[in-house]
Length: 420
Image 1: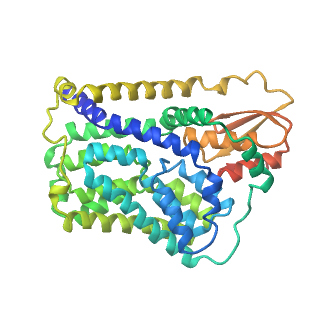
Image 2 (image 1 turned 45 degrees about the vertical axis):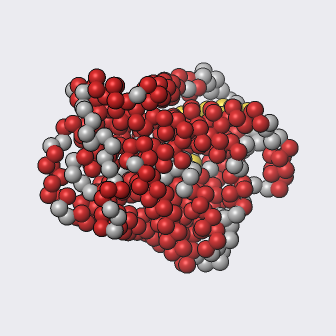
Image 3 (image 1 turned 90 degrees about the horizontal axis):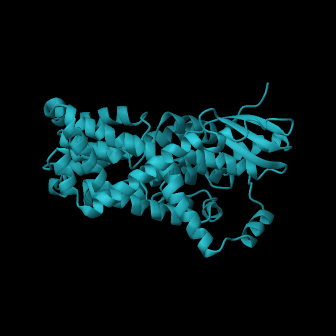
């Protein structure tokens, strides 16, 4: 148990400074880059919108569940099928937070190759979808000129934007990825300390077979880009190749059953098949390239020789890393507690004739919850909205039209359950 805690503390200390930096940049991107601007550049079918969507998606710190409503909202705001697919492939694979954390734990080679791999696979997948796309128009456009003009008039001041960036980065983002990050660290520490060193020896002799095995596990697995990093490191420590670890880093965050199902509904089965194929093929190709075309010296194991005890982990971490790890731990604790004291209890006695409840499918994280709440709040007649993530129920105070609420939920990328 002491060695397990030592491995956990050491990995957390190595990652914490870079994760905090990534969270800050994530908040600044969220606060200062308008989603309407992104959608405006992604409407035309063809390679230009695909390239733009890939470039936009690589630095965005959205997990595989948070990217779904974002991509669907972009599609319904005018983005082409090819651009939407490229965005869905590139965004969850990496982000400013995970790039920084990858550098800290796996070294610069992984940190550079990972966004390049995300970019290339998203371009290939997006172009393939774009080639099959007919010259149709998107289903609907929800942002009118009047709404954009109104938003321009109410553009927040610099201080307000900075406060919003800090809140989003260090609260909303931590709520969104915190569980996956902690889960990834725990799994990595368990693998490092309790899986025998020779467990993967047979697979290590056959890199392609090992990569296919990792793909079979990673594609349905639900893990964020940052949470996959310590798992990849622990697999390398047990003898698997850097290319196999890269396959996990690419395929794990990029695909899961929820994204495939939603893609099939929104873009069609052909687009969904291209999406999953581009992720699998791209991950394996880049994995093989890492193993056979790149020097092994590019992929050192920073923690391979570190002592495993709790005491030695604290000594080797350094003061600054320990402070960052403690700060990250505080943010995670606050995010965890907030899930239990969130306002889902505030309106339980206020469910009267002016309150309505709507069942919603597809919400997986606080980012999804926030998207639904914001969408419903924009409906005429809505006075206040409370969205319970665990039950999938939105409680709305006011007297809005039901169809308008259903449309707002759908426009955010989720499924309202309509009464039969």
